[in-house]
Amino acid sequence: MKEQKMKILCISFWTPPIVRPQSILIDKMIREWGRQGIRPVIMTYDICGDWQIDLPIYKIPQFSIGKRLTKIPGLVTIFEIFYYRKLFRAAKKIIKKHQINLVFSFANPQASNILGAMIAKKMKIKFAAHFSDPWFDNPYKKFSFWGTKKVRFLERFIMENSNRVIFVSEQTKRLVMKKYRQELQERALVIPHCFDLQDYPPVQKPSGEKFIFSYIGAFYSKRNPEMLFRIFGALQNDSEVSGKFKFRLVGGSMNYATYKQDLQKMANENGLENIVEIIPPVDYKKSLELMKLSDCLIVIDADFPNSPFLPSKAVDYAAAGRTVVGITPENSPTAEFLRKLGYRAFSHDQINELVDHLKKLILGEINPQINKDFLDQFDVSITTAKLINQFKQVLEE
Image (cartoon, rainbow, N blue to C red; front, side, top):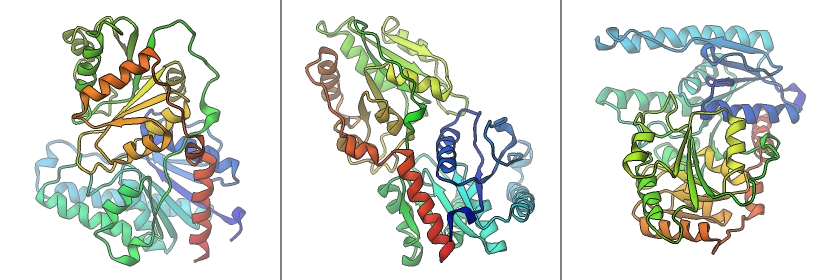
């Protein structure tokens, strides 16, 4: 089928201008879709605000229910059923108006994939589901007995009704799809996170400044800054590098995150008040500027065995052209990504090795060089071309 005949409904419930990882990702993707000749229709949450992009955008409310009602057994599920029926009716009108022939849903939240699967089943429209993170297999999630059954059912419903299931790493794909039959496994593929060099401002860190480490983004209960404070406390106590570096924490307490500790208080308690700079949340473009004004960027994963996560931030970091260091479980997607780039990753029990590595970076004893050929495959033009090719194949099946 010719490219111009693609009529795509993109269901992404987080979109700009709201600042969330999913909205940043979909913004990069959709702008590149336009450069490659695809103009989708967008369906998103009404709380996201007005996305300044020349595309049809339809807004729907988030699911909500009063706290008192959540205590009544089974009532949340009943309300969810009515909510999804309402979303389906809205989507059906959009699909008929714009003659949609393919639905692409972008999670999180998983509500987008559930709605996409409903559309595919009821309207016999081709459907591609995107999983940035696992759902049932997500180690961050703890489900009740009935919650486990519900999520298993809904995830299987998505898989059964999809023509393609897209993951951002091979490890995530294997983890999620291993419990499904071969036919469904064959629908799954990997298209990684992406960067867009056009987004990065032309700034350069002034010479003569202290060595700057930066961590940009939110913290969560199991991915928190405590290890960072221990590491930089050790560096501050080393006479060879004491006073030669700064550590910036940018946006460490986003509204959607679960980590609510007072970062400045923690820095003070660790004797790092003159080393640590706490910067409030910033927009995406400003975060890219702060990346380029750093010397070393730090990415952290929670200490889960067989971690399936590859944060989109790691890809943004790499494209900024600054040294990246990972704190992540051994053999995680992040560790593999950094090693192939030419950088180092350390597990959570390698504090001494990590401190030594950071010290050598400050003193200029090591200067890691990036593997540009490996990085290039994460360029948004490459990842988008792969995705559009899958859309073509689905429409021709």
